[in-house]
Image (cartoon, rainbow, N blue to C red; front, side, top):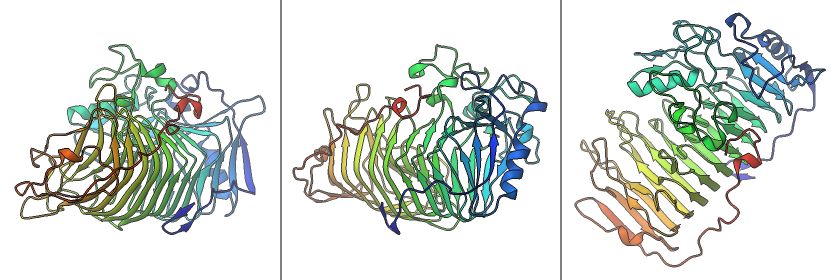
Length: 502
C-alpha cells in the first residue's frame, strides 16, 4: 500500500516463538465474570504472561493458545510489552482484563471511581513504553470488560467501569484504565486483533514513529453487555446514579477506538471500528507534531467519526483518508468527518485530504469546528488546506441530510479562516443544513471560511453564499461529476465480528 512515507505491506505473523501459553479458563457466553467474583482472584495469568514476555528474545513472540481441553480465556492485570517482542493471541482465544481497580491503580487509590479532580489514577491494561518493533498480533481478542461490575473499592459490586464513566455527565472525572497505550518508541504493530469493551480509550499512541494497525476490529459494547441491535429496555441503561444492566454505544463514554497522538508514519488499514466515542481521533497535544498519517480501506459504524483533535496545539500536517465508509446507525451523537479544537488546545491543522468516502445515517456528516468546547486560552485553532474530493452521503431516514458545520477561528484579534476545497461532494435526497454556532463562536454558519468549489459537483453549493460580514468567500465553480460509488461500501459489522450486536 502506498503511503506518504513509502510502500507498506501487510505485516507477517512472527516466525519464531519463545513461549506458548495455554489458556486455563473457560468463558461462559463470552464472559469471565463467573471466574473472578472475588478481588483476590482477579489476575491469575498476569505473572506467567509477563514473565514470558520479559524473558523473550527480540525478534520472537509469546503466543497465547487454547488449553488442552479447549479452554479459551486468559485473565490478567496490567502487562508491559518489550522491544522486539510480539504478543500473539491465537484465533478463538481471548485475553480478558481484570475488573479489580486495585490491579490498575497507580498510587492515588481512586482507580475505579469518579473524582472531582483528574489525577489519571489508573495504569493501562497493556503498555508499550519506549519500545521498538513490538506489537500485538493474531486473530484472537482482548476484552477490557467495561460493562462488568467492579470487585474492589467503593464501587465493588455496584458499578462497572462504564457506570463510572457515565458519572462524567455530572461533572466528575472517570478514573478508568485505557486498554492499549503506546508511549514513544518506534514501529509498533497491531495486526488482525479484535479489541473489545475498553473501560476507556481502546488504543492510544503518544510520540511514536511508525505505527501499523492492519485488519484490526474495535467494538464497544459487544453483545455480552447489550441486546441485539442495541435494543436495551427502558431503565436498563446508565444514569449517573444507577448501575446499568444494558449498554449502548451512546452510553459508554470516552471509549475512543484508535487515537494516534503526536505520532508519525501511522497507518490504519482494512479495519472495522464501532465505539461510543471517536472511532478515530488524531491528536496533536504537546510535542512533537503529528505528521504523515494514512487511513485507508476502513469501515466505521457507531461513534463520533473520523476525527482530528481536540488537542492540536503541537500541529498536524499531511493526513490522508481514503476509501472509508461510516454508517452511524442514526445515533444522535453520530459524526462523519470532523476536525475539532478550541482556543485552550488549538494549533495548525493543515494538508488534510479525504477521498472515496461513503457516509450514511449520520446526524452530523461534516464538522469543521474550532469552538469545540467553551474552554478558552491563547492556543488558537487554524484549519487550512483541507480537501474533500469524492465524498458521498446517502442521507438518513431520521436526520435527512443532517447538519454540517464550517467555521474558522476569528476572535481575540486572530483571523484564522478555514480554507477548504469541496470537489465531488454529493448528498443524496434532502440536502444538509448548516448547524448553529456554539461556545462563543459565530452564531450563524458557515463563518470565517474560504471555500474552493469544484471542479466536481457540490450538491449543497447553492446554500453557500459569499459574505463580507461573516468572511465567507467562494472561488471556483462546481460542475457535474459522478458521485462516489457506495453500492458495496457498507459491510455489516456482524459479518466480520461474530459478537457484534449490529
